[in-house]
Image (tube, rainbow, N blue to C red; front, top):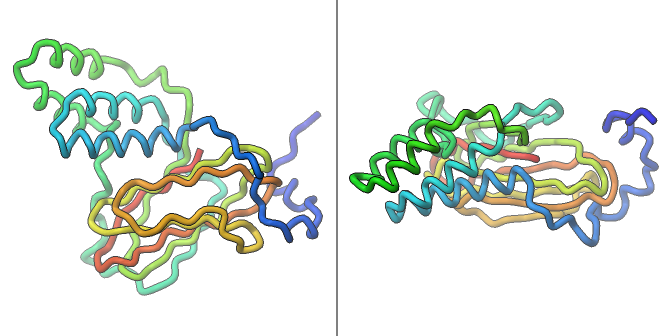
Length: 224
């Protein structure tokens, strides 16, 4: 039987179903690719804080095990004043999968031959084995602004939404269903954030990223 596209399935969903919160009572507990990328970022930050080469190598391995891909059905609207021209092109948080992370690991390895071998082996690994993917997108958010991303999610399929800011200020993450009911709400923080949920049925969800701080924030939004 041919599987219908999600927008078609959404159109066939009876309107009365939207009255109840679109959240399964028992979400899937298996971590996915978005969880992995958020964990990689948290591990990277801990490694940088403590100068720990082993933690940094773990973060690199986690980040490199996921291949990012752009979203195809996400729609963004922004409320609040736009950031000034001086904010354009601000760097996002360092990517543990990038070459800079390997260079830092080489520096932390110092003269330790065992650590040097671990860094060399990881650096020599080709990325061709990466088969699992995560949807990722980057955006700038000015002080007082909110980005709202509208996206379709399948019913009874575990969904993950990760948020990684640049660390210059706190960001808040909220997920609401098609009826406007919050199904995940995380307070403002500079730490990487993660919402995990399983919709009860097919529907459109809104992921809101808010910047209550005083500085422009460049963030990455991740979905599985």
